[in-house]
Each structure stands twice: as structure tokens, then as C-alpha cells.
Length: 141
Image (cartoon, helix red, strand yellow):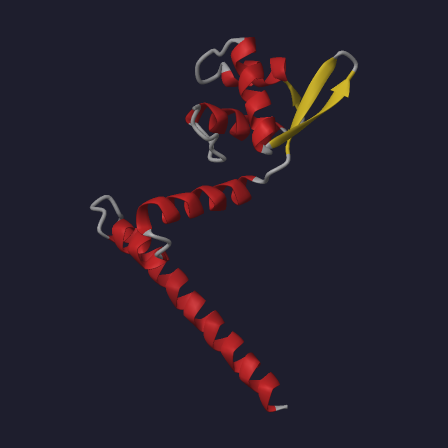
């Protein structure tokens, strides 16, 4: 029995998606040319990968003359959140706390990154407090 297809992006798929997110609608030949900046890819490899991306729901196509033009139909930030949710589920049992603690335990975390994380946590707490106050005010009325 073949393995169940994954909705996460392989490195090759992500490489082509980044090109499409940057360029927008593109023909396979244009995608292959853009990918050649990093390392050349055969036209057929790009075509196969783009078709897989279409099956996964990441791209769509329209016909223009004899060529198909492919466009991303999933935004980069949406794909990123999906990948993070996948990692969160697979490795951290859906615990955001375990994920963050794992990142904080990483020796490669810089002082600037840690500062920005603290600021973001503080801002989130402030947003939650404001939102909670607004909810309580609505209940009282």
C-alpha cells in the first residue's frame, strides 16, 4: 500500500512555491528559469512538482494559448502557519508551551530574538487584557 500523501511541503515543493509567491502567475519554463539561480532544475522536474502542488491545493492553473500558467492559491503566511501546526501536532502534542520552551532552550537564540519574543508575549498579554475587559463590559450591559 503506498504511503498517504502529505499536505506539507517537501523542500523541492517549497522552493517552487517561494518562486511563485515572489513572481506570481508563471509558466513552468519561467519557474524553471527562476529556480536555476539556486541550482538548475529540469523542465520535467518542475512540471511534475508543480502538478503535485496543484493536487495538494497549493497552486492552480489557467491555460494561456498552449501553455499553462500556474498561480499560488495558498498565501505564504497561511502555508507557514499550516507547517507550524503540523510540527506542533507531530512533535509537541499540540502544546504551544512545549514548542516555545523548546525554542527557548535552543542555544542559538540571540539576545535580540529573546527580547523580541518577550515584547511579543507582553503585547499579547495586553491584548488579552483589553479583550477580556471589553468582554466583561458587554456582559454587564
